[in-house]
Amino acid sequence: MMDKHKRPFNRSDIADKYKWQTKHLFKTDQLWEQSLTNFKESFADIEKFKGKLAESAESLLSCFKRRDNLEIQLGKLSIYANLKSDEDTRLSKYQEYRDKISHLAIQFNQIKSFIEPEILEMSDETLKVFLQKNSDLQLYQHYLDDLLRSKVHILDGEGEKLLALAGDLAQTPYQVFSMFNNADITFPQIKDEKNKSVELTKGNFSLYIRSENRTVRKKAYQSMYGTYQKWTNTLAANLAGSIKSDIYFARARKYNNTMEAALDTDNIPLSVYKNVVSTLQKNVAPMHQYIKLRKKILKLDKVKPWDLYVPLIKAMKWEISYEEALKIIEAALSPLGTDYLKDLQKAFSGGWFDVFESPGKRSGAYSTAVFGIPHPYMLLNYQGQLDDMFTVAHELGHSMHSYYTIQKQPYIYSNYTIFVAEVASTLNEALLIDYLLKNTSDPQKKIYLLNHYIDQIRGTLYIQAMFAEFEKKIHEISESGEALTAEVFGHITREIYQHYYGKDFIIDSLYEFNWCRIPHFYYNYYVYQYATGISAATTLAQKILSGNTESREAYLQFLRKGNSDYSINLLKDAGVDMTSPEPIESTARLFSNLVDQMEDLLKI
Image (cartoon, rainbow, N blue to C red; front, side, top):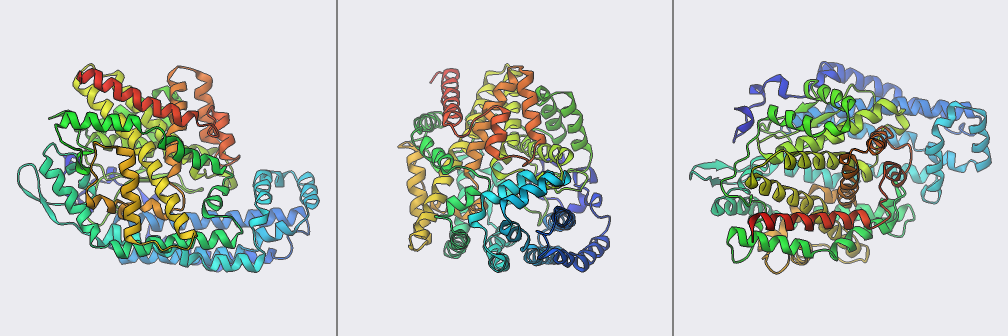
């Protein structure tokens, strides 16, 4: 069966129903190219508003409308180029499409860079009068309030233009990493459980690292990490360059440090980030307990990195076809109501997904959406395992969040911030695991599911807190003027992992290179939001599962609000306060409870 394949298919061999439909964006490449030409010929007309924004409310509103319209066009062009490139990263044609859009976006950002400085030069009284006189302009009230909040960090017109010009340089480290990680790097062959030679890929690595055969998973681990080891100095220099870029922009905008700059984008208090790191540092005992349990079940002297993901129930094969996964997900998400389920059917049959791995296809999974297109798009590399079903549920959470937001919000608020981005996706996973635990009477499967849930929390809460600590430290080192090298990255990695996993875990020397594989380290203080996301999602899921219809409706309203308010406020309205440590502590307690349940069932 296609979804149980162990080696990549050619894309042409995959049925259309398993591929996203880019024709919903542009039916042909030629139409995309024509749209690109049209955009290039028209976007400079935004400059006609330069120096005139303070003349009247109508002038300001017209500028906003023109900017919004151009950004919608650019978004549609961008998503098409990105999707086509990700179908096969080896194709230079679509790499060129992406490059063209990237350069064009930078030019557009340069041209429109006068807008916010001009607004900030206006007096508060002038803006107040404009808003009072023009009801249509009131749509932008929150946007303007947020802009004025950051007034001290906005440069004059020339300064903003210079920062926009530097945008191309700032993207280079991630672009280099992305091309290396998705198109260039290859891994040696390994022997599978039947002693057959197979080519290791990032897509099938998840299969072999979970093998019951310790030799197979160790070889998969050594093949993957050993390959990255050969490139550590290059990758270290590239990551260090990304950090320096973060520092440059933070200092240029007069922030005290990079963390403050990153969190200020959505008005997140620094205490929220620091709370993630400090709270989880103090709550490592459940993790140590779990590693000790893993050591006992697997009958090991010590747990090694290649022992962290193998299911703890021997011979438990839980293969799930893609179609079966969709049916289970639909049942699991039923607490969200009939309207939500109707919209799920649109996702399942409407060309939203690109399901299976193929040569050159971008690895991993994601959801992407842009205002003005019919629906979100989801990239998968489905391998037919339990984790893959959870990935589908996860990406659906993102997509439904985008779908509802774009339906209900005007363009200016049609996105949602990174801080809340993982809430809907992780809540879907929480509902799925709850459904599976409640609908199996097999003790062995329950143990397997408990292990999966524990590993989910470990991956989304604990490991992301570890990554957040790593990211915090490497930024601080670079900000203090010290050099970031492969040795420095490796030392920090070893120190953090050993603290979190405890005395029953031995960090193999290759595991010091784990940072080499993580694209999120190029995203500038991104990963901590996985930890806050799962904490918020766990809290909200428990309220929804209790049958409280008000909690369900509050959550669905959250999905429709986009970025029409600050993230902290949106979550408070939904029913969770992330300025408190309680959601994180509660999730850590849940982790501990799950470990206890697993020990009871195993009688260990």
